[in-house]
Length: 498
Image (cartoon, rainbow, N blue to C red; front, side, top):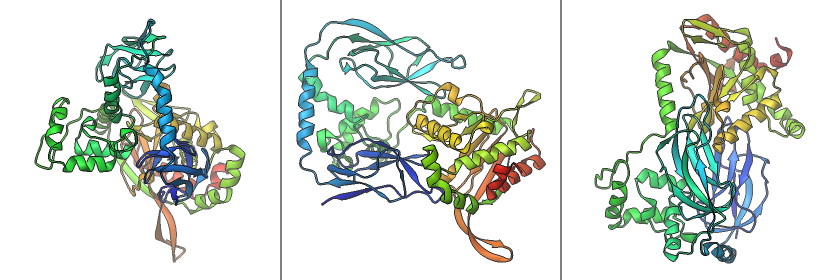
């Protein structure tokens, strides 16, 4: 008996999605809650996890394929023959734990930081001293105010000393550790037994289990995993919470944290320091609220013309350009044309001056595991619809994988944020300084509307434009928003420039 693996239910404003990355292949044994595949929409990446233990029997949609909500993309068979390959791979890995051989030390340094970044923070060490590492393996994440930089191993070897621990502040090109090139990890039975504890606290945990452990304020190393290879499952977490001896065991782990959890019977609280990126986001949002005369104006747009156009040409478009046709390219095109007609909105305040820009760099708000970021799509007035779609997809993937650079994040004259993919019906977005305005797109929802004296059910979407009233008057802001509405309701105008 097989179990169908389906695409999750997509929001109403998202017509289809793309198979981004398969983390398993046919024949692989999987465990319950293991992430099988990433499904990418216009702005977010959805994880599809295994409903139970088993073996991947078939994969019907390859990476890059366009899929619909609840479409079957794979089949999961019953568990049984999966243990042998896994055991074999573990046996093949055993020779790695051979006696250590001498080699030369190579320093691990912080990458060169951009001029606008004074220092950085050690975010996560992915290896521990004594572990074998391979060339190009990610050793440590270095977090700056806006991006995360990966430091990889230059050659095969063994991780040596870690000079700076997680959370410490470091400078560009500062030595933070070393590896012994040409060495192999020493054999040590106790270390091998201790390895699952460190693994369970990081990459081995599935997203749902990791989230549950964080919500309950637990320490993963205190929970015994019963899944394959010692993996922690949701049932293990539930059993740990119900066990009388589990609660005292969690106390020492909590005490070692920067701020201990406060036990309140069955309730507890946990204090976690903000990441560097989250602190930067918080400071910039607070600065925008306190330093601008921010005002928001609203309108609504009938999305039926664009939805009909997209439905008619999406297959031909994807076949010709190799990228699917989404809604964001229409939004970007409409915003770019409106910025041309209202240069005040495409300007910014610098001291007592207003700086008008004769280029059109648009920031696209992207949700990442580390927080909301706004990478920049440059020279949008010179890009075709296909080039815009490809540019947005590239930025979204880089954001998901933590590959955004400082250059990707620098600049931008105007920001588009689409909360509709999360189900938001209406919001008042906050300006992304030093820009003077931001456009919020929302959920496309069918509503009864009066059309020529008759009631029709139409797919409507609210638009919200927040702007700095010190620079932009009501006439320009409302005219700008109405222009976007007119262009979206009649996409032909974008082509004819009328």
